[in-house]
Length: 212
Image (cartoon, rainbow, N blue to C red; front, side):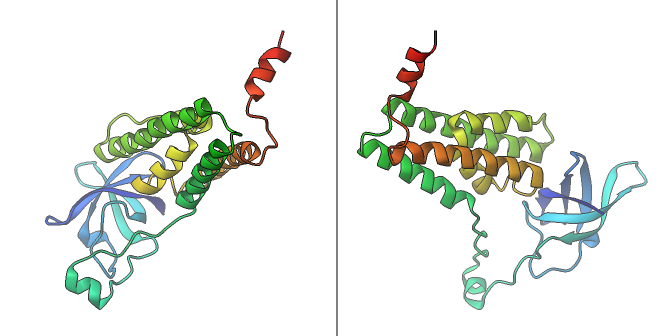
């Protein structure tokens, strides 16, 4: 059995495409999806048995929705609302970084250029995750993972965390998640160092004076 994400789904016609963790796209029909409380939805994570159709096209069989869609409450069914998205640690962690940056600015312990750099790179990283998710859904050339992680490392971590959560992208690969946590931890300690005064706000100027 393989794992992947339902990146394209035509509910009226009952078929779509799964992007496997290895990068291959598999055609899937509703008849090959196990019964769940709600209809399949784009963004669902699945496990499936790979196969080939008569035309040689990759197909997914015996598809199971991972963490099967929860059944909506009666009130939600009456107003036609979907179940709310499951919250993750990414948004609180990004929010904590933003709070520490603001505290550092207000106390004069973090420079405005550094805060602006976090904001600029955060916007770039956020939209990079959005574009890569779109590329995955349309089968286009993807943004390399090392590029996305590089943007996060180069002060775009807040936008990267928000992008992963908003677009439900890069949230299942254990290796990627571990690297994201490592990058986030480094930046969290870095920002907290400024906010509590362990790192002087003019540290970059001091480093330039030390260097020959």
